[in-house]
Amino acid sequence: MELDAFIEQWVEGYLLGDLRSMAELPPDKSGTEYGGAGYPMLATTVAGMELLGLLLMRDGSQFDPRRGRDHFANYWNHYLVPARPLYRSLEDLLYTLVRNGIAHTFMAKHKVCDADPMTRTPSPR
Image 1 (spheres, rainbow, N blue to C red):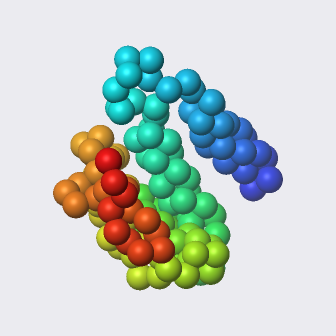
Image 2 (tube, helix red, strand yellow):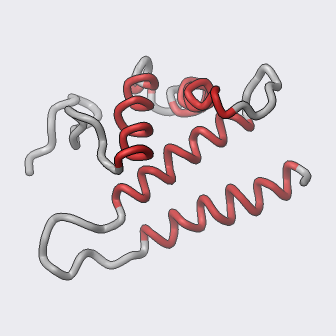
């Protein structure tokens, strides 16, 4: 499969299409604060960052399932941090706590919470 066709089908079609679909889901009607597809959206986003990091590897490396952390870090450091410098040096922490936590146990690991990105103080609940 050519790269353009891959990006159209897998990135723009499935990945971004799924995110758009989940973003349009109505809030949970039970009145609780839970639900709303937050974890599936986050899992899809970080998996997408890992995929894009692989596709954008500057060393031209081929797919290696043991290099997921490298792929994620590549996307984080070369594409996310330039747009959001405050996130510099957080790729390993987020990969471990969020990406691995949600992918393997469907729970962000301990001490992950909503926070104001400018002050890093927890959001009130």
